Image 1 (cartoon, rainbow over the protein chains, first blue to last red):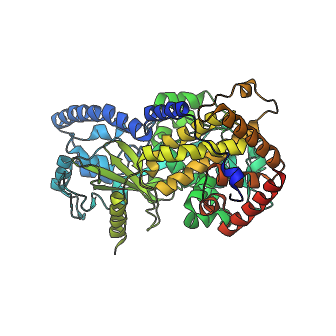
Image 2 (tube, rainbow over the protein chains, first blue to last red):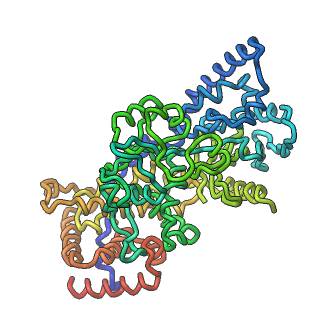
Length: 382
Length: 176
């Protein structure tokens, strides 16, 4: 008999009824992420097509049309990517496209929303489009649908052309606007924080008031509303704010390359005591939620902020204020350009998917991105 | 190789990795998570609830690990750990009435009674141990993880895991 046999024998099989019940619940739950995205595709794709066609007709009849490339070149507020479901992009960017097929480059120019699916005929149309002056197109090497995985074709190489994703932290203050940094937000929202005595260990987040994080901040309870977990915008929030704040501690920063899982565990886990709450899906509901909680700090996409700037309050992040110029030039810290790739997935035997790569400004930081498949948006892990 | 070529190469490799068979993962990991909670709590009450909670959280975003089984399993246990910590933190000192209504499904009633009482005995013996030691026992004997897997999860070196567990087993055995 082994020395520790008395412990091994304490194990037992889970009750079969429980195992079956849980399995059926999980099966019903599905993958969540992908299915939710798929439903968005199903709903939005026909709307885009119809809207695009109607607009195209009006556009040609009016005789006031400008080149879509010209629109693409000037990065307007509306052309900033709206990567989450609460964004206001359909009205502003997609509807300007002259037609559904020719809309492809304009969509890339204004940011490929996650509900967009690149189809082979659209790729061909992209290839046929005239290039703007001084622009070179990288070769498209699209595999034939049904054939094994081929290369990855690059649809756009100029980051500014593709679009940006930007987050804004805003809020109305009873006294004076706060000036927040990523570190402030990390200290306010992380589930566990490095122990001040021994930073290699963590302790449950003790902060209840902004002023306990930094005496220069307001003596008001911490309340933050932001993107729902699992949304694209939430992931951007984790990368651009939580990680930025987390990286302040060298002992945590080194984990990024040594133990990614532990790093994410420390830097991505948000507190669950109600301090952080997700904004509801949908623009109107999100804005309503913000307005009904005037004391809350809000994290939202730039397009939604820009459209409701007067109601939402100023940007609270220290540094450059968000506008199309600061975002496109990279001076606004919580934004980043988006690269668009397209290719086929091994399991997509008859359709072509697209990969949306998120990138930071610094070269070589293409750490991970999104694979847009027929079953929804899938994050590519490192 | 340019940055873009490197990226394309990385993506191609990602595509070609086999996808995880989630049914097999469930079959394999359910007993581990289930027993992890039994050992961690030292009783049967709420074990099913915590196991369900862990799997539901993990399943919601499993697509993130569709090509990375090892990463998923590690992540699953991290979720289980957090679920357990939250539960124990909020635990009130009262014993719920439901604990008297344990339903057993496998084994004879005598076996179950014996196992249940042994589990209670283990809970008594480990009650005064530091949380880390309790966690190690649950991971080793409840979840049946290897020392290497435990080391990866806890951040303790593999040799230290072995040493601590050896000492714990000697201690528990002497008092069993």
